[in-house]
Image (cartoon, rainbow, N blue to C red; front, top):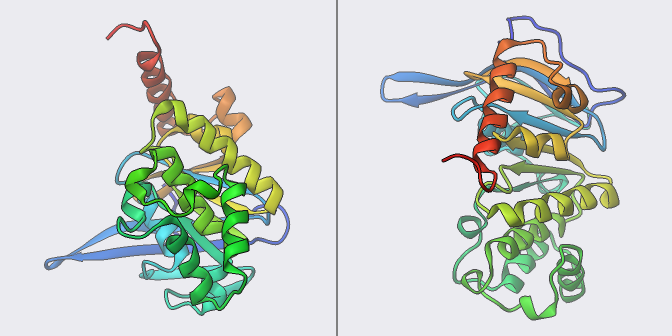
Length: 271
């Protein structure tokens, strides 16, 4: 766990996202529940960075704090070197977009794909909506026939593609991904991960991915921060993660659990 006063783990070069000694607490009756404690890391421009840990480790709370959806109790968040709070300007919100875990829940059931994609353009006063919507759909592997469909008329993978298109239509520089494949069938997960990797490269995006699945993180990320009980366990590159060359016992336990789960999930494995 991150000790008090731990130096910021800096990515090479100037950071696009900096999290310095971040803490987040929520009121629960008379009690204060600390979800994130004294967390520090930095993400370089164009880097794909992962946050992993078991349920309740605080990783999604960190992502929401970076997005401005949760107010930090203490600490500093910087985007492109500038401190930001939970109240963001339109320009700051356009710079950074979030893709949620469940695409069905994040899309309004009574709005067509066209409406879902046109709303952010209208809010930010961006013209040529029809052209931008069609281009956004093409980029995520959908075509014109999907434009006027409702979420219930789409598959889970198609809904997540729409959610990704909605995030990218404002041309952000930072994409936050909260378990973007965990609500999808296993057969579709690889397609979405490959799409995200392709879009990151083509748009020069900085991405921060939250996942409990180490295989997903190793596929998409260059470095990963392991979290437990709201604190930082260690930061390592994914090559070390693949080799199992980790420093902390908790990370080894996560690796062992991930490998065991995947063996049980393989066809013909013992049930």
